[in-house]
Image (cartoon, rainbow, N blue to C red):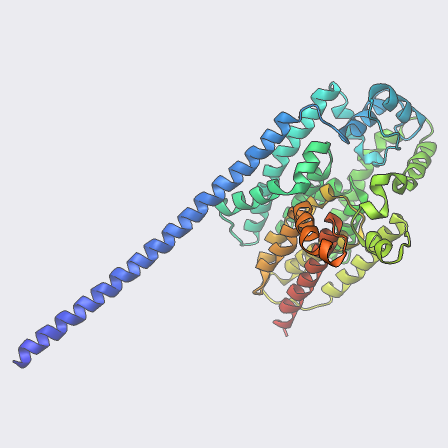
Length: 432
């Protein structure tokens, strides 16, 4: 009888054990199936969003707002004239019915790009520019993935397709393509800089700096962020040298001193255009204007941003970071902080804000449990117009508060700065 009971107990134990194993296998299969479904969704999402941008280009082939000014500058440089003088406005009025009569605000280091594009007929050049920018969105994702892999962070292709789709879905991306703007090239420059910093390749970092300096008010902030780190001095020196060489052909024309003077005079008139006034751009000048009605020159704000960024970078450099790659992580933390500073201080339009996108990937390199929170400011910037419209309907009409995309963006960068501070503090505290 006892032997029979023992046989029954052994059978029960085997049955329970087999059920547990089956349950474990089933759970693993279900988890794997969920991961596979998510990967498929992410891939399809990215492809659909990129397809949407292809459609945007195809249906707006002859619509342009800003590219004409880059093309015109190259055209003038190509015939030996300066785009910073009276010839620019005169030629613009002759060639374009919707010319805005503003000076050419871009610096002389655009010479190579704009003269190359001016070699083509205007509409052909416009289409080349748009397709080139679309390819840069994909290339930026590949560059980021390669850089993260060099840091030991392997991001799956499905995750990168999801990220690329989110970038493609940004209203900044849509506006950059429609307006013929330069923001996607600046975004690519930030991605190249990140790759160079993470991979410890000075030449790549220098190229990234050069691309960012095509919009100096953005590029200089990132230079200030990395200036305190001696390991980046060589790439900074390379970048300054290459940028000078890029601008040099424009200085070989007669009377280069007068050309530079005309450029600076035109630049001082930037805020006179209605779209560049304090109430139509984001950043600190907009916040001060809305609170006090005091107009602070954009140049003064930009200079203040450089000093403030440099000071914060010195504080970051003076901290003790945890982890094997603590030195590299300091540089990456400075880049993330630099992106936050640029967003908070520098006056920008919505299409300029594309450059912040890589931040949501860079935060993965740090210890902490709130990296996903960086999606909040990113998504706020991604659909700033839509969120402003919804907030205005829900809050604005009831509370008498005016909410627009600038309000959303300023709030997004305030949240982002707070998260960056939390991220840095969590990494510093673990080392002590």
